[in-house]
Amino acid sequence: MPPDISSLSGGSLIVAWQLKDKNVLIVGGGDVASGRIESILVADAHITLIAPRAGLHPLTKHFIDNSDRITYHDRVFAGPQDLADIDMVLTAIDDVEVSRQICALCRERKIPVNVADIPPSCDFYFGSQIRSGPLQIMISTNGRSPKLANIIRKRIETCIPDHAGEAIEKVGELREKLKERAPGVGGDLGKRRMRWMIDVCSSWSMEELALLDDKMIARLLDEGWEKNQVPRLEDVGGHTKKASANATSVRSPSLLLPTAVGFVAGVLCSAAFLLTRPR
Amino acid sequence: MPPDISSLSGGSLIVAWQLKDKNVLIVGGGDVASGRIESILVADAHITLIAPRAGLHPLTKHFIDNSDRITYHDRVFAGPQDLADIDMVLTAIDDVEVSRQICALCRERKIPVNVADIPPSCDFYFGSQIRSGPLQIMISTNGRSPKLANIIRKRIETCIPDHAGEAIEKVGELREKLKERAPGVGGDLGKRRMRWMIDVCSSWSMEELALLDDKMIARLLDEGWEKNQVPRLEDVGGHTKKASANATSVRSPSLLLPTAVGFVAGVLCSAAFLLTRPR
Image (cartoon, rainbow over all chains, first blue to last red; front, side):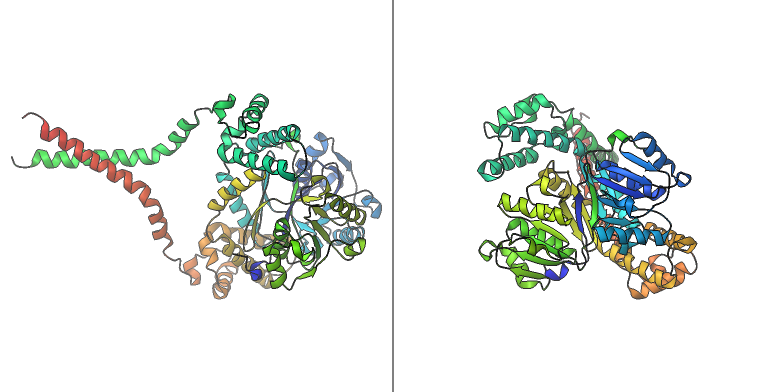
């Protein structure tokens, strides 16, 4: 059924912005700025940080001292020259007027900008995030309730499959190796590649995928891709760490206890009835 | 503990891009393009769609016919003039050469661009998404495995609290009304507002928050904000729909069945032993 057009409204376009080797200017060094720095480092960008040293958050100091991807200037924002060669700007300062000026300068230059706490001066918002290696999850309430976003984030954290991050990493490596073995963009080969990758990801558990190493990947391609089938983990030399035993031990207590309680109750009732009845 | 700098790498910057009343050009009308159209409509942008009618996906046709936010041109991309006043460009066509040309034109003009299936021509990627009203969740594997992103999305869908979308909507309304009653940006009042909103969201369940209506919101502000406390749902005139009874009925079967099985087994074993023993 096609979606109801009227329901398509009130959201944002959630995207994974690519910043590898780009230049991001962060103005401000406090609590909020330290979170921004972390997010930008994750995205492999170079950071120019402008903030008087007196107001630096300990975490900001930690980043300045330990990352070779931050160029730090101990001063306030000085004007348009600070925007030369900058691909994105994030500000997190208390001065609303300066924040708005920076935003205006960015808009003139078509530099994407986020001004903390001033939504109209933001081309994009941040949300509540989860990260595990290459897996990134973002929860946005579109500015309605940061607290509920956090509650939902915590709930989601508990239900992400174990080993998801490692599994994604290994599947990424498998896909790269497969592309080396069967190169080309699109076409029938591209479709067959995609189909086989989907089959592998659907047949293997996250835990199994996470166990893949170079040798197993090579065997998986030899035994699987070349023969157009999906071998099991054991077929390519892998062993789960008693996965089934673990699975059982997680499930058992909730079933074992009531069963045992029922059994004892049954024995007692039955015994009481049979032993006390008149003969 | 401060994060390990070396672990901060290999990701993207996941953001909620704001497109309300912006102009987005979509080149292509097939399967992928229809998904893009839906995402852009959700974000309240205006769409210019360029694609020969012959290749339109049924869903794309549905959007063209039913949305007043799409300007449709039955033709191929014609050159730089198609980029006038455009804030973002998404292409989803088979012609790799034209795709790359469009990307180059966008980069010259600093227009954010996504070219489907050609990562180096993308300023941003899309991910696997969940949406419920104002709640948007995005799962990105940073291009490693769309299939695993989908598997994780399905898992997450099952664990999002019921009524989360409505709860967020209502909390957004509550926050707006609170700001009208206690206006101003930042400062002590801003902190008190934030603290009280957090207390409400922490004390009430999603189901309770979702039940809020205008009258209850007014009473919540009178009885709660004004008196610096958090009333219960019942205190502001609300009633949950037998939430506790439902909760019980969901839990019971999993305990009832093994208990009953155990009981019967106990009765049978005990009876067999007692009735067959020599007297």
